[in-house]
Image 1 (cartoon, helix red, strand yellow):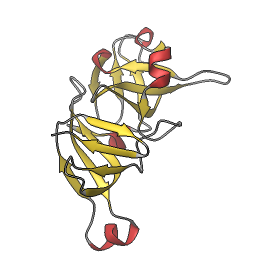
Image 2 (cartoon, helix red, strand yellow):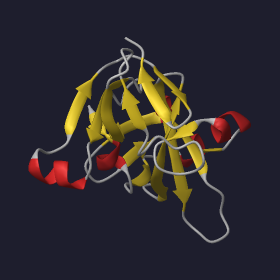
Image 3 (cartoon, helix red, strand yellow):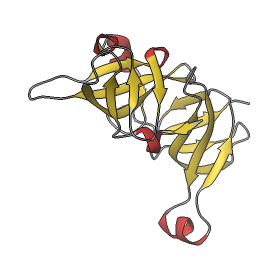
Image 4 (cartoon, helix red, strand yellow):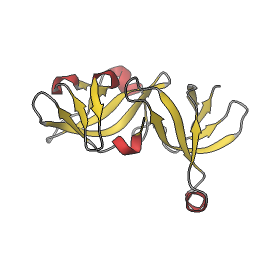
Length: 157
């Protein structure tokens, strides 16, 4: 199990060549799961690429391993419309997380996911800086899909 904050910024490394393909920029969330990562490739004037979660060989503490650099794909229209955790107009970071009963759990800060299949198993929420310092962040364990609209994410349990 990983959190996105431990994966963000890691280099994406090719097992076939040993070369760095870029680094993890963001998490792509579709249909209640992590579908992959947005990768910032090395070089000038390059466009972001998509790394599907099923093409990842392993996620370690120092890199995300892929069999070959060709597993990285240009962003399709589908990925461009998907929710990202931290970037873009469809970002989840900082979104209010509520229960199906209408209770606000806090603001979404991070996600816990299983790397093999991309299943989200929990959400890290914050109540603000002071609460983080005094009480710490809270982890909400849930494999429920989110309903996302209007700056809110609702856990459908």
